[in-house]
Image (cartoon, rainbow, N blue to C red; front, side, top):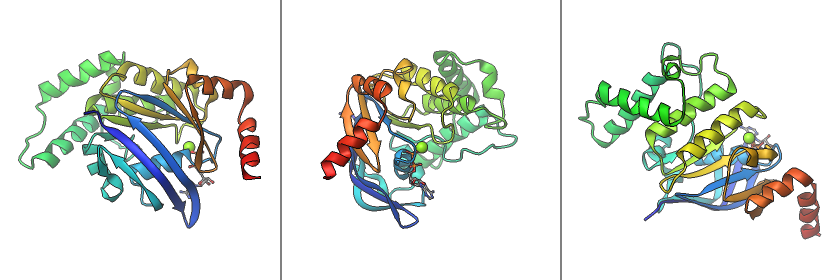
Length: 258
Ligand code: ADP
Ligand code: MG
């Protein structure tokens, strides 16, 4: 059976301030979803909450992954279930190469399953890494770079995509969190997602960049405003947004409230 990430009536507060106000969303393996919305609408709050960031307090609702309520789990337990949530430590790690970081990530997962595990043998790891870099059309030199040390927004995302390729999650959440409007980063994420997409991978791409369809082909598009998903549809919704912006949605929202 294919796995699904189900967000049910999720309410989240940050420093006592309600930010998410009842989010509902289902992402299944094999589906590509785009979550869009203006700055400050709560998109990153959603991804940090799914990640298990301690500053984000869930006041109501559930996040179910593969039948398990993950809100009680540690971030690494969430990842072991097959949920990919970008880097848990998106800082520069001096002296640690991208390859070392990825090997540690694989070994940590293996040891969590079997404390006796000796880790992936280096030749097997090398083969895996090269296979994945080739699939993503990445320069092999990238694996020897120090992780995030002076990385551009695009290079950070490249490392993230490579980590995703190596860990083979069931559902991945890609947020533009720290890259803002960086087109290069969005391009890297989109190309990576397009190459890795398939029946075993579900993806939620989070962006406020309206021309996302130039880069990625989501089957589902959702729009978040003021902590709620106010509209869901197909790719035509993103096209509509590109043409008309978010104002028509604000007016519709105000109309609903009246
Ligand atoms: P988006 O990703 O859609 O731009 P965010 O989730 O980053 O939106 O932010 C939604 C709201 O939550 C904003 O008003 C922001 O100021 C607030 N917020 C988010 N994270 C924090 C935080 N760690 N501390 C204080 N306020 C936060
Ligand atoms: Mg954000």
